[in-house]
Image 1: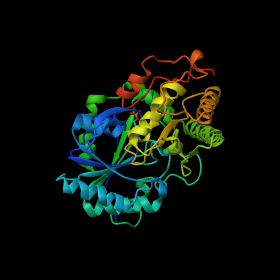
Image 2: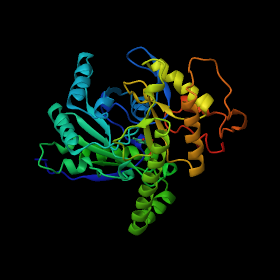
Image 3: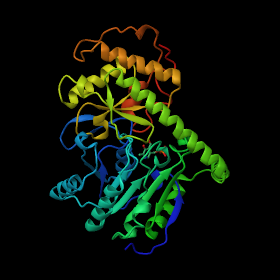
Image 4: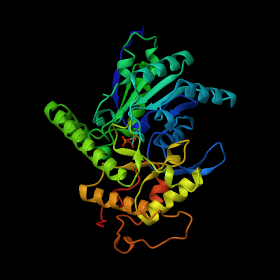
Length: 377
Ligand SMILES: Cc1ncc(COP(=O)(O)O)c(C=O)c1O
């Protein structure tokens, strides 16, 4: 049974949270935007994930991806966890924790109850910490329902609660990324105490606190907002996947959360390599003028997957995006050919001339607004 322990909320920026560990395992695919870093396999390629930025850059922890694959809809398996753990051990790295994002960015999928239980068993057997990023918890727009790790650890399952920590923020569910309000929910008093101290370096302003407190205490408003947001996301998801299907493009079918789609462009690759994926990405960004993120930027192990953010544009812009994708696919663009002038290029206006640099340099927020915002054809 889980040990009895008090739990606490501690409001602070993610960055203020310092994890006393050498290494954290991460679920293979998590977040957005790009930055180039060198991976162990020696290849230079854009990898984006927020965990790289938030956890590696300041603290120096090492991250080992836990691989997953499309054959089982990118599930997190016990075998993959063991493999990553053993690999770390072989490299003389002491694993201190496992970091998961549930619902997943970029997959838009949720961890089912059995997987969550298996994760809890895994971290208890290894005696390592479990950090669950549940930032997309209220974006789930269809069945199955979201299951928090907090629910699993209350079940009749062997678990040292001191090992379990949840992170959350208002950025996604409430659409407030700019307010920089994040939360740590930990069952571990030492972590909470440390987080409280560290939060001094990233305090949420009193004005923000006042506004958030009054907003969150209005249950009716919050309930209505989240319901409306889910309804809109469900509709957007449906229209976008249907639109892509017209161009014979599939998306990960098990996705029912998040603000994005996991698009399968494996059929458009010249060959099954990450170089080909990058070549395709360059065509998409420079010629089709769409800002999508290649799978390699999320440590995806299969070339050809791309994340498409679908929530940050109006309906008209979405139609423009879809029609560009359809035109592009129908023309069967050869990614190896020299740059071609496409029909829409003359009239396209990008919202930011720094799009490419931002995309590469910022591992977090790709752009202040979608490059599609000013495009009308
Ligand atoms: C999985 C995940 N965690 C955390 C964050 C951080 O969000 P913020 O810093 O805006 O609260 C993001 C943002 O993209 C995310 O996708």
